[in-house]
Image (cartoon, rainbow, N blue to C red; front, side, top):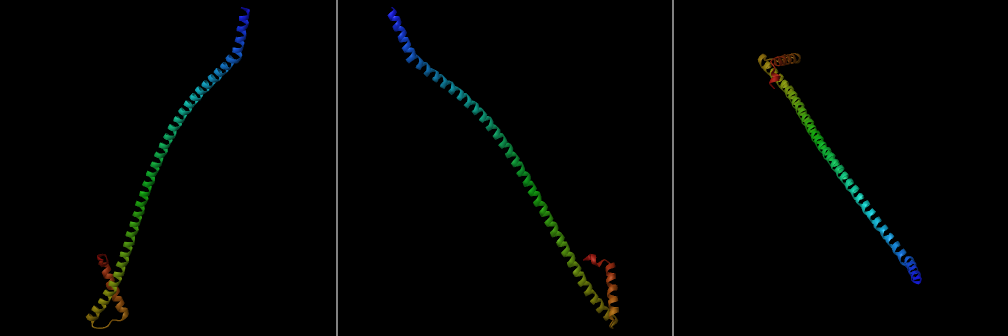
Length: 159
């Protein structure tokens, strides 16, 4: 029985030294690997949640920025439209002003021509009426008198 007890102790020692210790070491490594894998999975899950939050934040910011860009583009378009309207208005006013000036100049030119022709007609008419030539000073005085009479009668406004 003592021999069996010694054999048992020897077998136990050998098993403990060569089987139990390596198996225990392998099991500890395996447990450590599994725990590390669980921690990595938990960390990956947290990273995924943070990435999802950041993705949502970026999408929200992108939407906000796109709305700002759209609003700015709308304002720019309105500004450009108003600018073009103002520019067109100014150009049309300039054209109208130029046309009025041209009409006024042509009217003045026509009135001057009319005065000259009317003066000549007055001289010819007075020449025929009096049947004699009038001196240049008297002729000019007569023309001026007729023109003043015509201006008093607003003949110019008729034109």
